[in-house]
Length: 273
Ligand SMILES: C[S@@+](CC[C@H](N)C(=O)[O-])C[C@H]1O[C@@H](n2cnc3c(N)ncnc32)[C@H](O)[C@@H]1O
Image (cartoon, rainbow, N blue to C red):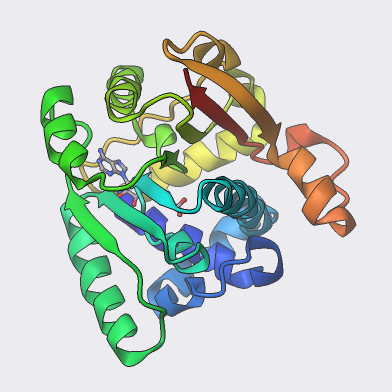
């Protein structure tokens, strides 16, 4: 499996639970190859994966919607955007900068332009930037992204990406964020707590990736303690929730008894100060 394939998996998850994810465009990316992978993951890793990823999307859908409403627009910078489609549910006064590896960006740009032309998607202002966080220096990333920011305030999203990066790369990205943002701007980030490594379900996830990683892609299996966010220079933590708590709000019928049984990612909002 290539890391990029995980982007197809996540968007297919969102399409399975549109009522929860609120992503009614995710289904545009559905394809037979990804459909064929999912039964194995849901059976051998965790049956709740699709709904948990939909809950994650719902959280950011709500928070970004409120943020851009309050400021009457702004810029969303989506780092490791994959096939996420927030830009089409946000108001059209939001400019989006999509950042990912080259093959995802090339493919996404072509498909989105086609769907907008066809009228399958509403028109939006979107900038596409391909870069590899592991290769590009901090200065180079700032030099490329900064001129694309045409509208304040800035919401930076880092969703479903940290798991694949080393701590050094994570620290580099957050230094980039600090240089791109001003007071009142917000970061949304997702990561596993180190404690997740003790759970059986996390081991099953790693086993799955180990068995299916037939490329040179690095899956770093990163976890991040809350203290990383609490001590982040230039930011204060304004919201923290996990998917277990989100399920009680947006999917009460799911009734997960024990948070140790699920791949319980934590979601954070951090405000630049
Ligand atoms: C699991 S997907 C998540 C996509 C999207 N954020 C979402 O939540 O649906 C991870 C994404 O991170 C991107 N990614 C991983 N490592 C990266 C790197 N070193 N540089 C740029 N993008 C990277 C992958 O290409 C992929 O699109």
